[in-house]
Each structure stands twice: as structure tokens, then as C-alpha cells.
Image (cartoon, rainbow, N blue to C red; front, side):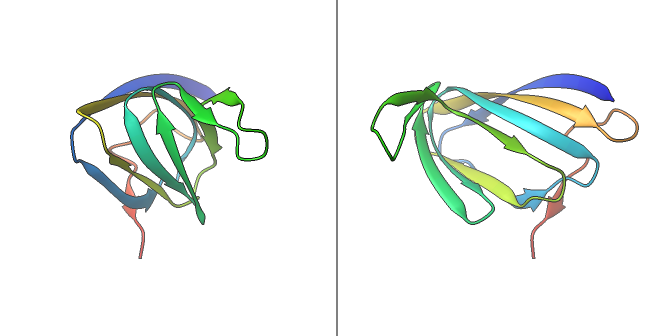
Length: 104
């Protein structure tokens, strides 16, 4: 598999609409910023690289594996957000912004 890493800067009040990727499996790590993530039918609020575990309240690294075709999106609630997207490409290497399919 072809692996690549993208660092994304997202400004304040940006909404990344619900979408999927057809040829990428992603592993997203929130590096900085307060963000409301939606992945499939789950919603999670994160701040910086950490989130609270719902079961125990303990801190955990804010990361999520997102396979190809799984609908996801985000809303930036702080002045900006940084996140890493480690991508496994099923075919040729392509940026996540190019392999972007809006959800219906």
C-alpha cells in the first residue's frame, strides 16, 4: 500500500461537510484546536490532541481510523485546527481534498 501524510490547517468557524473518500483509508490525529468531529453516526468533541473517554473520563489521544467510504466531517470551534491525516492509498497517491465525495 502507498502511505502518505497530510497536515491540515483549518481556520475558525470552518465546517468540513459530511463526505467520504473512495480510494483512501485515513487515520486522523487532532493536533490542535477544539473540533466537533462526526464519523459515521458518532459525534465527538475534542480539544487539542486530547479527548475525554466517555466511560472513565480519562484523557486519551484524539485520533480515529476512517476507512474508505465512511462518511465523516468536522466543525472547527476554536481559532484554528491542525490535524494529521495518515492515508493509505488503494490506487495512486492522491490528496484527500481531490478524493472528496460529498455525502447525500
